[in-house]
Amino acid sequence: MIMKKRFLTNQTIFTHTVFKGYAALICLLMAYNAYAIPESFLELSPSERHQLMKGDLIIKTKDIKESTWPEVTLYGKIETNPLLALSVYAAYDYQKNYVPDVTKSDPIKHITPTDVHVSYERDLPWPLSSTKYTTGNVVSKLSEDAYSINWYLVHSDSIADTKGIAFFNRYKNFTIFKYKTFIIPKTVFAPLLKNNMLNDLKQSMTKIISHIETITTSSPELANSFKEKIINALNGIRVYEK
Image 1 (cartoon, one colour):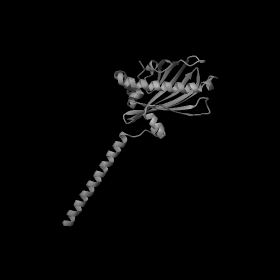
Image 2 (cartoon, one colour):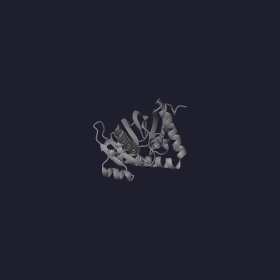
Image 3 (cartoon, rainbow, N blue to C red):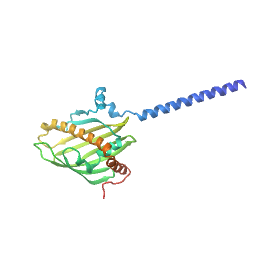
Image 4 (cartoon, helix red, strand yellow):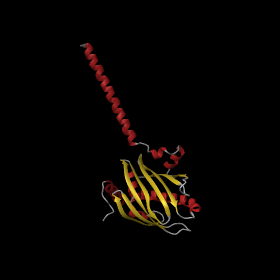
């Protein structure tokens, strides 16, 4: 009896210890998931991460044989959650109100609830005139804390092709924004305008990020209306059809 009691006591202690171990592991995994570091953040060097956390934009370029302009990857920090950040960014009919040099942004066609063709008009720097183009734009939910939007060219009077994708990933209480694109221009002035393109992109993204942060804090009702559109689109509703 004494040996049996001792065995039961030891078994109870062992079971309790294992249970505590699993509980600690679960808590650790929950904490890790709550503060999981996005891959886009890990792609940066320690010094680049430090710059990003201060609010600076990080720009990387890669030469591609198809174009005189490089592939551009930009990283930024947005002081709001990923869903709201994407929602303002992908409010197509609102973009003309704040995106630099864009004078028209009209959703014209649904391919699917999440794939929308948008017609744009944009002012270009001298010696170029304004341009008209249409892109397809596809929003996706990658997880509860990660979203993306990718775009492709439908037609344009000034570029031969363009593709890109932007990621919105939660990190702590803000969003890590990664934007990647390439453009194949038609103009013979393209080599001369390479630096202008990079500067314009940086200025545009700075203003876009700033506007997203402003809208989500100072105009929450407007931001939430954009969020509702994204949620409805992800649920299969064609939000731009009358």
